[in-house]
Image (cartoon, rainbow over all chains, first blue to last red; front, side):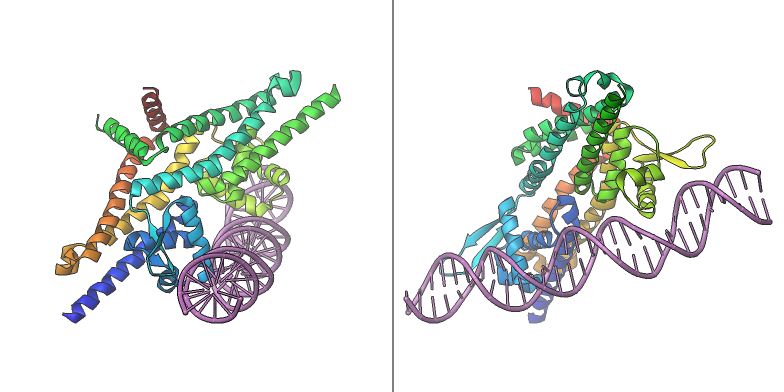
Length: 186
Length: 186
DNA sequence: TACAATTTTCACATCTTCCTAAAAGGAATA
DNA sequence: TATTCCTTTTAGGAAGATGTGAAAATTGTA
């Protein structure tokens, strides 16, 4: 009986490792560093509040590294600090709602990346208008460039405004997905 | 008059540089290398077919590097080779439709990343079922892990099937965006 | 076929990013 | 306030990703 319990524990650990490895590979997709992803993966899959030491041991990562990445995770809102009464150590716990996690990550990327892009595009576009460029804005090369920048700008603006609406909260995401899924059925 | 024309050319070059720099920064978002992105940026914004030498000169990148990255761009379908009659050199030209570009990139990422993820998740899930784990699968730790993996699996499966539908062609993307935009108006 | 023009490949160099270990900093207890 | 426990910061180093240049391969031309 004892061996069976130990066996189970080992198997669970195995699954957890696979999962952490998976998160590790997804890091690029989420736009976060692999270690940050692994830590979050561990917290998500175990579903419990872990201390820095727990994480260090489990993932073989140095203290400093764990500390830095946990701060970022907290900053992003994917993980929150948990204080246990009677204990000095801090513990950390992942969000459990996958929709919410998804929304948070999407929003971070939007703010950090999309908004910058839109500003630059706007600037590029303005430098190609007749006001800035004078009569020669009508010449073919300037026209073509203006069009291309503008196309992109329109697409990203559209996507951005949708994101604003649907990533505001994780309910928004749910709605959007359901809407599209419905459409698919038709 | 001559100076004005030169001035215009310089300004256009300036805008192009900004744009290339922007693309460079977007590389992470697209999941491609910065140089690959810059090359594509240049091809997109100029809207003309350029030779390897043109690109080398303009972006100050070595021949080998340009060659490798152009191959990838062609492989991805973002750029196509153009043969000019009477010239031995190959020229390269970017897709011009932003929707199509977007769709291509999204599909690449999906195939290269999402599909792998789904497989791993499926495997993890199967290792947590009563069939594999025996009676102890009912115990709290196994249950919790199963649930978490399963939540994720469901979400990603849903997103994946939508992607399949809507990223099949760039028309699909248009439809989806229009659908969501409509909804927004209500 | 030989030659010239062009592209691709690849070993090596460079750069960036990430990680570690150790020291400094901060908070709870006595 | 001193001590202990824990976390954060940081300087430097390792690992991985990217870029280079020149040789090899390929393609077109005479």
